[in-house]
Amino acid sequence: MPELSPEIILRVDNLKKYFPVRAGFFRRVSEYIKAVDDVSFSIPRGKTLGLVGESGSGKTTVGRSILRAIDPTDGRILFRHNGNVVDVAALDRKELKGIRHHMQMVFQDPFSSLNPRMPVLDLIAEPLRAHGWSFKKRRERVHELMELVGLDPRLMSRYPHAFSGGQRQRIGIARALALNPSLIVADEPVSALDVSVQAQILNLLNRLQKQLGLTYLFVAHDLSVIRYICDRVAVMYSGRIVEVADGEEIFQEPRHPYSRTLIAAAPIPDPKANWLALSSDAENVELDAQGVERPKPANGCAFAPRCPLAIDRCWKERPPLDPLQDNPTRQSACFRADEVKNAE
Image 1 (cartoon, rainbow, N blue to C red):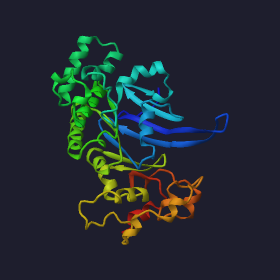
Image 2 (cartoon, rainbow, N blue to C red):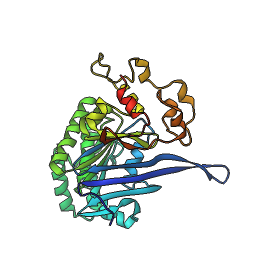
Image 3 (cartoon, one colour):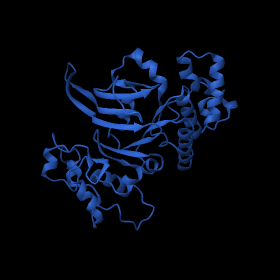
Image 4 (cartoon, rainbow, N blue to C red):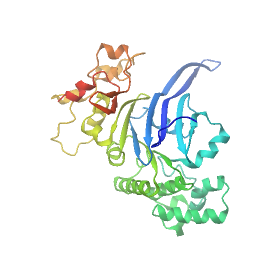
């Protein structure tokens, strides 16, 4: 049995997902797109890890690989359920079905993820039917789940088009909870909703976590959402994690140039605040405009072409994701992490 600390429910070790690029008449593989490249992290039971980064950074691919919606290229996905630890990446299809009800997903678009030709009763009961529940038990469970997520059970005969976006996302959450999972991968679950509705769904997720003891991997690009709901944050760039820290720490004192740039690009409630600047010059927060066009170094830091603090070493060596000397609970993949901290 793989080893996993008792308080950890999920640990990802050196996860990789490469997509082949085929070219030529015979469609031979010419190269690989490294969507996820050597990603590692862990999530304690009952906590929320936020995975944040710009579009194309590999966040969603990580979530889908963990659930085996797509098969990872390499790495281990250690998951604890019923006192046992399994490597999800090594399971075959038959073995996967045995742990499916412990790991579920909430999707980004609450409309396209629901079959418009099925009533709410059948939509929420889909996983129950797949695991052999009788119709009577399915109906009772759907009634219970709709109340749990704040929907009127009398509406279970209606179809998705009769509900608002927020209500449809509640239906998606109810479906994910049908089999009493312990881990939920939430893939941008509020990005398609209005701001006021976002707050309602986030509060619902917080309440469900406390009530049911759920663990979340929360994928998002909205930093305000990440800051509100996540206990710990991992920042991804170009398929790799570049910084990991507790939620508030990473916003108060980012220790990687990309994290700092990402946070600086977000709206700031107080326009007089200057704590996001890399230096006293506001322009230093922005990316190196000329560097954007330079190709990524083969062996160095992927962020080097866009980094205002890049040095020669950054182009030759890939910085490891190591604990910081002054704070071992934080990790940063930057040779100049201390200089980022001390910049004004």
